[in-house]
Amino acid sequence: MSTVIDVHAHYLPEAAFDEMTSGIAVVSRVNDGDLHDCIELNGMRVGTTAEQITSLDSMLRAMDAVGVERRVISPPPFTYRYWSSPEDALRLHRILNDATAAAVAAHPDRFTGLATAPFQAPDAAIAELERATRELGLSGVTVGTNIDGRTVAEDGPRDVLEHIVDLGVPVLMHPDFVPQPRLASHYLINLIGMPTESAIVLANLVVSGTLERLPDLRICFVHGGGSFPALLGRLDKGWNVRPETRASTSRPPSEQLSGVFFDSLTHSPRALRYLIDLVGPEHVVVGTDAPFDVEEPDPVGRLRQCPGLTEAEEHEILARSPLRWLHGERGQ
Image (cartoon, rainbow, N blue to C red):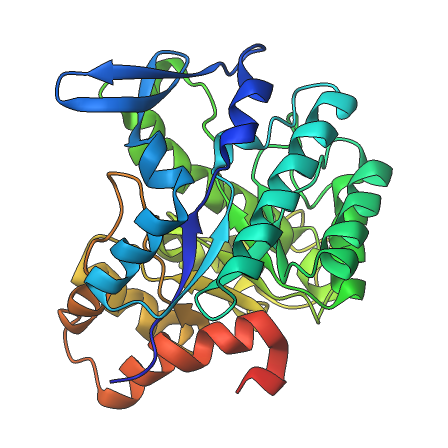
């Protein structure tokens, strides 16, 4: 079987918790019946215990149990805190980057690490990403979808994105928890809200012309790209009939995805088949969302449930596409 690389998994060091006890997103730890030390965000269980997300030994055991040789680890989205002061965010992000680099150094054959930065303060973000990639040796950047009300396609955050391209490292785009009254119950803030967030950002990257201006950008959208794949035909239709949709681009959305990757976390073999057929297996990578309760616990088994999956497609998704996202063409 091909080497299995999981590009979407999370790690959070113990030292980060003390930095997230105030503000509009308060992180706490509680016991819930037989589950001890559960992480909550504003009183909502986020679906993992502290031990699962802070213990490297626990992470390695989980990887071995499902046959994952390497995981690309990044902080969970509630650590982005783009709404907070740049000083507070930078302090937290430096803690996260130092700890991620230490985790990779302890297990270089099992972990690849992504950096984080305060995108609400572009100059500070660029400086921290320089430190995290060039000094600490982290291999890429994770960024959220809601940068204090903006996206990476807008002035300010886009400057940071352009600098990431200059650094030659990939981006993992992860949706944030964005409060919406209509999604406030039944955990719809994640189940519907997060996939919608991904579609909003990728659509903005396309229609703003950002992807055309940054042909070397390698950006991966988690959760199978959220609802974007199902909307791509509608975006193409809008580009063809609406002058405001095509005002900033020379090509329709479906022709701008050469540097865009999508993880396999669709929770549906038929949806994954659609994604593979839409963008090609060379743009699909394995993602699990470990260690959260919405993770895919058996990524290879789930991939093989995809209707009509060929051996060539399986090898591409498990081993080749992740390297292409991480390293560019030389990753092939």
